[in-house]
Each structure stands twice: as C-alpha cells, then as structure tokens.
Length: 224
Image (cartoon, rainbow, N blue to C red):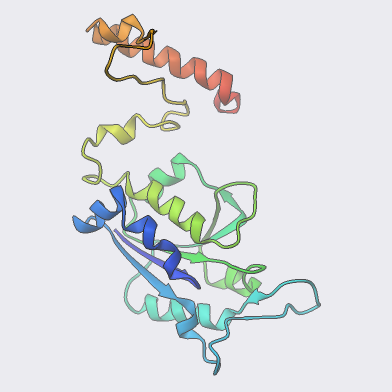
C-alpha cells in the first residue's frame, strides 16, 4: 500500500511512524508512507499557504493553489483510490471504513489547519472526508496518524498473528471480551475458571457472552 500525506507540519509524524507496528510494516515494505510539505508548492515569495477569509471572520484559511499543485504532482506519479480530507464534519471513521480502506492500493490524506481549507478544495480535489470524532483538533495530522494506524494493522503480514485483527473490538459490532494472562492468581485476584478449563468451545461461548454484555453496558448504540 502507498499512503501520501499532505501536511504543513510533516515533523508531527516522526514519532508515530518510527515506532512499533507501523515501523515494522514500513521495514517489511508492506506499506510506503510519503509526507509532502504543502509549503513546498506555494508560489509566493514567502511560501505562504493561507490567507484571510473572504467576507471576514476570525482565523486564516488554507489556500487552494498549493494544495492543488501538490496533488497535481502526485497524480502524475500514481492513481489514487481515495483522496481523503480530515475534517471534524466529515464521515465518522469506524472499523468498517478501516477494513474497506485497508484493501486499497493508493491513498492520499490532506491535513487541514487553521480554520480549514478553501471550500474549492473540498468541492473539486478530494473524494472523501473523514472525522475521528465530534471535536476539533489543531490540525488534521493527528487524525491522519490515527486512521493510518488503524488501516495498516489490517494489512496481511503486518501483525504477527493475522487473526488478532479479526478479533478486535468493533469487527463484529461488539466490544472485545476481557483478557487475562499469567499468573492465574495475583493479590487474590483470580482469572475466571472457564479460561483455565481447556474446553475451547465453552471458552469461545464465554468470550461471546462477555462481548455481548460489555457492549450492552458500555456501547448500547452498537446493539442492533
């Protein structure tokens, strides 16, 4: 998979993409992530990428020209399955969307900043808008990192045990059941006997019951 991220602050991604699972996925060449500084496509003398909004109002707006020029350059290199703008009023990102995007070949993410981007970018240059929640961040970089992480871990070969991703919360619209590890007893706190029984069918049934109960208690909105 190829992921291109258009941003004003590429350094924000340094720690995120140089650690843990994403780092290993890059090293195994299962995913390629390229960061593109939008400022490099500004034609102004001082590399300006924003301006005051027409009609007045507080804040600055990212200009259409450098974003368009950056995307034009990328379109010459590859054909994108999706060009996604990270926006608080976009479609709410969830596990089903992560599953869908993990099967794509080329994705581009546009990270907004300030008061957002010129509306002509949204009308003409992107194919989808995604949000990670009903709140506002300083920029789209953190949202892009979250979505990138959620997608990459689903790519075959990224996780040591590929079945692990299939048992994650929300894969079947349920929250994952509780998990335990050694020791079986700690400070008087015991692991449920069923998990030590060795009876896999009963263990699977217990896991499913726990998932249902947890979902009813914590995320009743997921129960259909």
